[in-house]
Image (cartoon, rainbow, N blue to C red; front, side, top):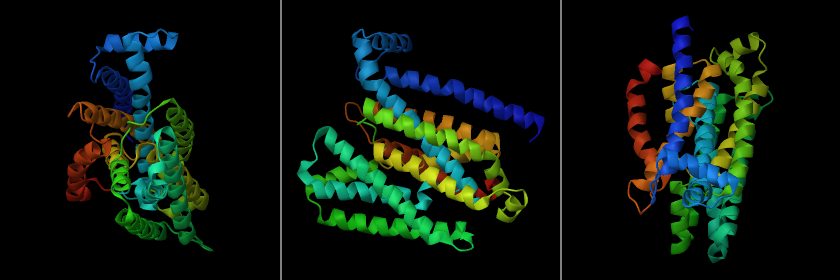
Amino acid sequence: MSGHSALFSRGVLAGLLILLPLCMLVALGSGAVTLSPLQAVVGIGDWWRGEYSQAGVIVGQIRLPRVLLAALVGAVLATSGAAMQGLFRNPLADPSLIGVTAGASLGASVVIVLAGSNLQGLSAVTAVSTGAFTGGLLAVLVVYRLAASDTGTSVATMLLAGIAISALAGALGNLLEFHADSEALRRISLWQMGGLDGANNERLAFAAVVSFFVLGCLPLFARRLNALLLGESEARYLGINVEFTKRALVVLVAIGVGASVALAGTIAFVGLVVPHIMRMLVGPDHRLLLPASALAGAALLVVADNLARVVMAPTELPVGIVTAIVGVPFFISLLRQRSHYGMQ
């Protein structure tokens, strides 16, 4: 990377470090009761000191957990997408390629259909989240076992196995929906659209633990991902343990995306769009690309969730619809321009 481009890339990172808190501050002030940025900051202070002012209750107990959860989920999805694009050496890859999203969706559907009317309140959210997390991890385990052999783990086979397992999980999910009653079918549909309306301190704590683990570990593989961009043979020649790298990346992405889908449902295109934009801005060096993707993904999902809350108020849109509306046109643009922006 040239000195000028390195300076520009670090400028992008600095801009994202400023943009993310601003987006979060605007989101904290938006809603049925509009607060200015100053009132939002004062509300956080009141809540932190245990003073139950109107702003303190609105910001601290209702909006802050949701905004923080959106930031964590967005950061994990975007960083996982960047890691998968590096692993598959394809800028159009996203975390769902290894089957975790489809498996999580099936796991959630199984819990919703089997539990039926017994799903009520907080226990319902916990049960569905547990089912989704378990389903996502099991799907990735199957994909990895199918791709593993005595000669190593084939990335191409992993891709094909991920597509196959995703199709199978989708078919089983459709079968469950076919036999589900109206209430269960509505629950499944709303969950699959994605949403952060279930945010609370307990879910935020779980998201924080998983996010800090995943976001702390993935940058450790930045140099290895850079070497993999040259090809697996070249990476081995440079002393990279390719098999360990692939295995570790798949496990980290499975944990991160599985937890994100369990907490927020299916949120499309964040893992695809954000890393690709960041690659165009900061370049393919994963030492910059991974943190840039985390910051941009967090900002994007905070903004998307804010729009989901206010654009049709008092009705709240599922945030997955908002990200899809943004992501689909961009994805079509990527397909049309992939010869200009594809990885080398």
